[in-house]
Length: 525
Image 1 (cartoon, rainbow, N blue to C red):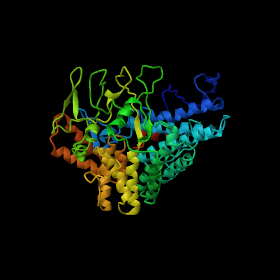
Image 2 (cartoon, one colour):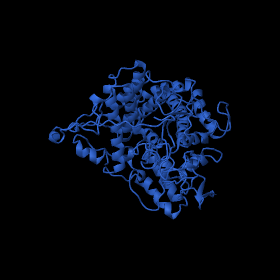
Image 3 (spheres, rainbow, N blue to C red):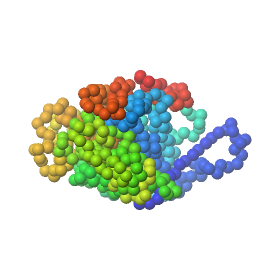
């Protein structure tokens, strides 16, 4: 976590290697054993920071999860003049290092959480503070397991710290049991953490974050592959708790949400939970990410205002056309211009230049840290926004009620009114949805989630749980065949041509299978 103060990363390393004991006849000086740690409240808080730190690792939200893992699904494709392989093009092998590092980082976070939970009783400290730490750690362990089960299906469920390098033979646990553990952890966390208002910023777990992520967990549980539709009632319950808490409302400006992330400004009413990054790599402690330098409007110069941006991902024409011309979100989520020259100038695209447009939601020109790093950025990344909660509620309520009721319409229409620059809480017939049946409403809601949450690492998970991933990917492939696409971008169609039924999950990493003989590979890999 950071909040205007220097970040300290606490990593706990424990090794038990009896066969090499004759080489280890002196006390190690570069590691800390559990018996020597967890003695004070300060040490406990440092260990907590170590559990949070995994969120910002390069293998997760620091890099891979925005631009390298194909989580944008039908919303974007890799902007490259040559054919590439990997998760981003849905042409991936079990030996892929991106997938391997993603898996490893999540289990690292789980193991850090397990270590802390097993030792949380040791320091003498205020019990309320101890319980708040416990709540955050339980929630984070549940969240790491949620990312695993959503992206790999059945995974080994480990709730005790790994203390021996020989303890590697652990079978995959059925997804239902993994979800039950996630539910158990998050429900236990809920009464222990502070409210969003008490916390006051998005980088620390708060009750609204627990409620909102629980709603998301239940929606995944209710969807493919488990399809336990009783969980829609739970998704409705927990998303409604966020809405009725009175602590949250939409920021009137869609653009300002993302400017705030670039400028390290907190808006707990809209941005309920976010991954925090800091600095420009010029300090001794590095806690920056690549938000805005991977996804962003490409710029090849080191301009001090714009900053260097790789611009890995271009928007699909399918996403572009999902917006109406008057939807203010479109020209923010999808860059309407390119940079040219030194210093870079903005050159607007013509109406026919659709495939050339970069994902534009993350803009380095708004960063206030100077000088700008070539690669890294201080921009925060959203994990849960209030608009997401409103849309989750609208979906869950409609599934439970069997028809879109007034409360569901109100939730989705708040999101739409902001998108068109209207007053959020005032009905507006020009933009509001109304008079739909269940199927039509849910179809419109699926498109609304894409328009609102584009390039926030959410779309693939949504399509998978709705059972629509392959269908939507093939729709984009067909658009590539019909549209005028520049020659240097035509290979982008490969992503959508390659997508198949197996891509609802990633392969179990080959390296993990070589260590753990009890692992069984996913279908199709």
